[in-house]
Length: 148
Image (cartoon, rainbow, N blue to C red):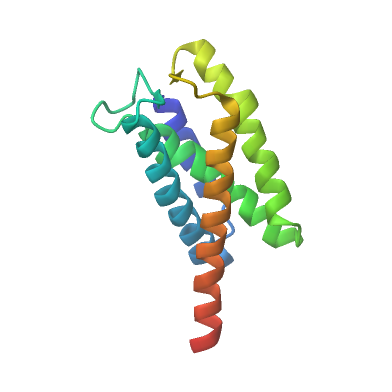
């Protein structure tokens, strides 16, 4: 879990487009906040948990604050740089996280699902975060254009 915390941040530092630093970081912050709330909601309801957190008081830290937001930040950066559809590539990334990455974490014992929750529920959570983070970003870009 420590690797999932540190390695993405190092990669982001190397790969982030410095000319769009504020925009990409604000998107990442928005994604992190929404993803963190959804993750906390799921943990508090007993739907999932991280048995071996990097920091015990903050159980989802490695994924909530680093791996997942950084991945989506790089997807966002890639889509705006190449003028691709953000939603298509973000949804594809969400599918990969939901149906490939999370099952691997489950098999490794680093993530546990409880009750009736399955990977489709996780995908729905990712989709909600993908849309809300983008809408937040679009709102702030609109405000910047309007008042700049």
